[in-house]
Length: 147
Image (cartoon, rainbow, N blue to C red; front, top):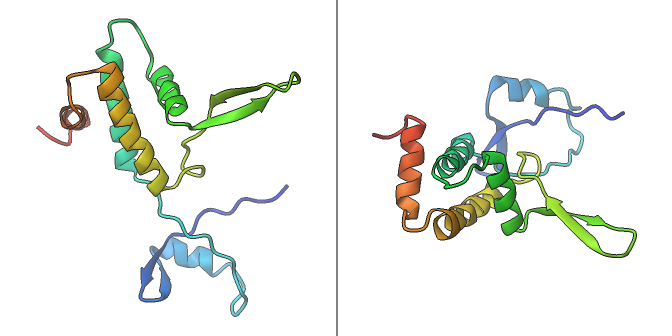
């Protein structure tokens, strides 16, 4: 079984990549010096944006006329945004289940687009009349970020 390595975070300085923290430097030193390394560069996901997303889902769930969980809302949004995994059936048909927006499956740029689509879906179909700015403001208040 292949051992998974922790990610190494770097910052770009000119055309150089510099370890972001001492632990990143230590992890980088685990590789041989002077040898070519393959690097896949992505921007790390925003934890504050993810927390804001789940706070918005909590607000929606709390304001629905019927009981619905944040997880059910999350799955509905993923399916509506095309974040789905195909399940091929023996008959030749294909079913779909909600896919993943996990940190290792979706980078920040993709999650930003997903977040914007989710926000639009919420205010159009679930809480019409509220408006995007109001929803975000209420979610930030819930997180203790704004008054």
